Amino acid sequence: MSTSKPCILLVEDEPAQREILRYNLTSEGYEVMMASNGDDALVMVDEVMPDLILLDWMLPGVSGIEICRQIKARKETRTIPVIMLSARSEEMDRVRGLEIGADDYMVKPFSVSELMARIRTQLRRTRPAAIGQQLEFEGIVLDGDSHRVTRDGEPIKLGPTEFRLLSTLIEKPGRVWSREQLLDRVWGRDVYVDTRTVDVHVGRLRKALCKHGGEDPLRTVRGTGYSLG
Image (cartoon, rainbow, N blue to C red; front, side, top):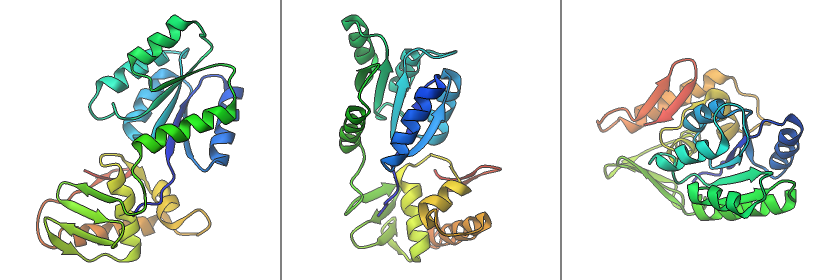
């Protein structure tokens, strides 16, 4: 069972607006990643695989509308909800944004409270429920109710930390998690744990998952962190 916070990628080039949104999003309990231009945003979408994207239309480099088009054109990212934020208030602009693939469209200036409500609505539609959720990846099945893990039908015995670690990794297969992000998700912000501890527990998880044979599903990204698949 994963209890991780939803991750939101905020793409906004105006510093004051970006900071206001960051503050409100973190106050609501979200993990916030930020980009100030289109090129960085596209890189971060692949690296982070966020739960939701807040996307300004007018950006340096690649425009928000083009970013949205690319995200919705790719199988790996098309299910990520995108809320377009724009000063363009004409009906034709709103229609264009929605037709290109945006899941919602808000005209600046907007109510922050309304934006938070729309974010919650989008996440309810796309993010799996944490409690009782069964997650699966290439034969690995994690059952949140029973706290049991199997691989190709064989039971996998995991300690509590390894279970929480797998819960995080299996939630977003392919996403690369840094050691610092895994520390935050698995151990929490208020606990001091050295980043090398992550390596130790990843090693234990890897050993447990490969106990009955099969390829190693965990990928080590040198200098960055780990991913499942």
